[in-house]
Image (cartoon, rainbow, N blue to C red; front, side, top):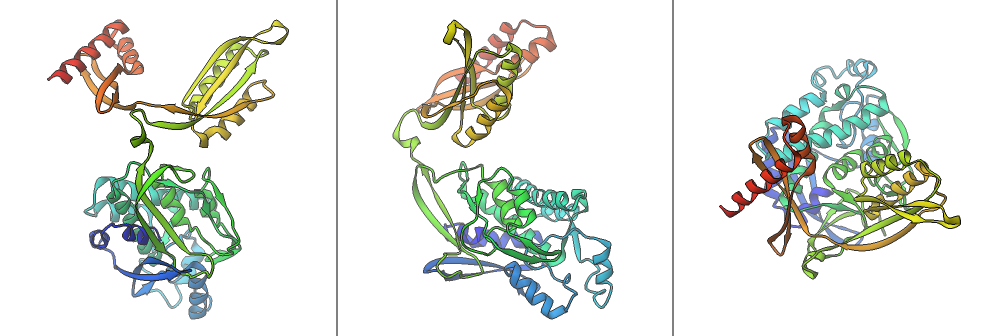
Length: 429
């Protein structure tokens, strides 16, 4: 569905065809226009060994009908990854031996297939990360090592094509960030190699830890493990639809037509509005505050450090005079809206406060970037802020300067001055 949406949004199909050829696997792509609940969408099928990918439940009923019990022959949903046990090996030795000499592919082999493909290094790394996310989830569920996880032959080819093309296509979009809405995982149960499981399947749920998910009225599997792994690696964050000016929209179709529920994945490509509306782009932030007057300073310092580790944008303390003339501290935590719940829990768990005040605010931020400056003592990163394309502010990264000052026994101020001097010479030249 993701690949179909990419093609619909303008990623050339030829890019995917070339990617499949570069992978040197026995697969080809087929593209078609279909209707899903009245929406015209692009359907992209991966054909492996002459067969199309099917939704998991259709695949298993078909396979069981054909093999009566030998349902390990073709894992063709592209979303079936089985821990390879001796039991299965034994099952395959009867009547299928010639077909099953190479019936499984481990992560090592998959890494090699993707590693040798003539695609960009970024795409290779992303594709391998997606497979590793998939393998790690399966390994945890089956209580085994990730390197022991095996993907069934046909399903593996399917997943290799799906995943590598997803990484290549995402890079081809050339966007700064992919933001994903909360995921409707579906409901009911699904049959797979190990039996019948509730939806979301265990591997899907494992991969989607910390992602916002929900279940609607559709009693089908709407997010597969492969889909979950693709989105968790490629999306830089989950959130509501951002303020943006949509430019291209693509719809990718799933295999099923679910009647009054459009079984499509929509991708919207555009520019975030903030960049156009102001010289100083604004972003929404959440501020969490708590007054504390009965806590030791050591614990307070620890809480501030923990909040920064947990993703707070900034943390500070202000001295305040509280009721009964007690001196106290006001803890302020600035964070992204999607991190506020986690940080609120941290404040309650680690401080003595009984209440946390929460407010949403906007902040204007200068565009920032890091440059690496080579000083006589070593590399220092320089933080450079821009207004309207011209540099308005620059400062050497404190941690880098401190490390050099300690290691080289040079005064910290000398390291900082040297970094600024080298930066300005480079800028002028």
